[in-house]
Every structure is written in C-alpha cells, then in structure tokens.
Length: 193
Image (cartoon, rainbow, N blue to C red; front, side, top):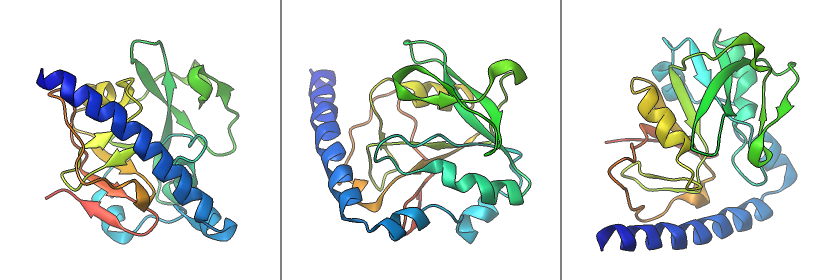
C-alpha cells in the first residue's frame, strides 16, 4: 500500500513540478536565462577540484541547461561527458564531449556525442530533475536512468541542477532512490547535511 501512495505522490508531484518549472522559466528575462549556469561557484569548484571526468546533460525544453557549464569545466581541465541512452530499460552510458563536437540524435529527444570513442566513467554526475527537497531527494522523469547511473558509479559526486522554483517541501523516496550530494540552482548551491 505504501508503494502505491508514493507512486501516486510522485506522479502528482511530477505534474506540479513541471508546471512550476515552466512558469518560473517563463518569468525570466532573456538575459537572466542566458547568464544562468555559466559559472561554477567556488564551494562547488573546490568539491570537484580532484575530479577528472564531469558528466553534464543537454537541457531539454525548460530544464536547467547543464551544457552551459562545459566551458568553465574545460578551463578547469576537466573532461566533460554527456549521457547516451542505450535502451528503454533505463540504461545509459557517458561519452566524452567538447562544445565544438557534433551531437547525434538519441531517444526521447536527447542528443549525445559520437559513441565511437567509447564510454567513460564520471567522477561527478550533474543530473536533471523535476523537483528536489532539502533532504537531497530528487524527483526525476520516472525512467530511472539517473538512479541506475548513480548506482553504477557509487563514488561519483551526485549534483542536481535545477531552477530555484523546483524546490519542493518533500519528495517521496523509494529504496532505490539515491540522494543527491548537492543541488545547484541559478541562485545558490545547496549541500546535503
């Protein structure tokens, strides 16, 4: 019974969170939107200083645009990776990418680098989300792709990227949901604990 309640709560929260995100992004002026997520705050830069491979994602629609962090990560000497969805079962891999590299269409409207270079293992994973809470629970789209990636790379630092309006009072967590280590919004860095 509890699983049914949590599943219903997550479905309802996804609808609410999508609308909140849409409404918030619609209120941003174009300059504020273009400048968001172009800089990595110094507390986060210190946390990722020893990382070699940082996984971003290509923001879709009104998602927080993780790809904007790529330039600064490159200056920091990091290898940037993007996910490539492998199947509908929630499997994905990470491929090296530079902003000047071409992207190829993937499932669900995603884009990914050329897979010829092979998969790489990230030290840091930036994840998109619909909602988050201060306990660092993440509400995703429901496909489990990032939950599986977090489990596959348990030592990777897990960072949610979101607009501030995506914060929720509470996000129900299933046993397989791994909490984030931190969330970066356009206005702040929120750390676990």
